Length: 311
Image (cartoon, rainbow, N blue to C red; front, side):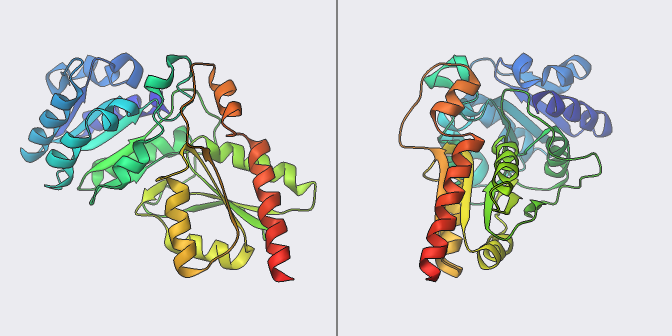
């Protein structure tokens, strides 16, 4: 996803001189270095001063530019929340925050670099559009949509390489969920790298006679309420899967819609109320229950509760 972001940003820079890029001494990791090499006059390395980077991006946006500001997700919101709130959200400026290294799959960098609160923070700010792509193909399209759409955006990318979920004929639609797999027994709604895990879980559950619908919800805000309500009405059970704290992210957003419009049994695959440790990404995802195995268990639970309620 990071490499695709860097390449797409470079292409956008070639297409429009209004595109500018900012980074906070992490351009090799966020891949904004590709843009910097070709357009040094439109690239601003702000150093380890993320709050200043946000303020500069806001100023550039107020001057008519389309700034893409990048750093790790833990810094973009954890360190800069006040600046993002005051300088971008409240005036509604056309700033695109593209944060890499989201979630716990950052791995060995440890607890201080694991961004598990960022979606709750950015979701609390009025006016922001929030996107969590599932793969590189969706990343490229989401970045282009952000560039073409006026207003503040937050795009969250992960650190490790991820499998492709889509073919190259895929078309990203802002604010719309994507039904990747049909099913009538239950629905798994997932974001980011958890989409691939949801697909694995659905394939395994099919052998047990449980047919799972899998929805990718790439736009967390504004969320696709119609898709959520339809999934509840048509499958009767919902499981959400995200690489984020259980509070304030995808699960919270989906649960609000379910409670308001069509209550059904739900389970939440997410980081529970804890911080984890340094470790390899796969080890940490397993430790926090963010794998296909745990999605399968959650689906079984909701299906069982659905049958019990029906009786």
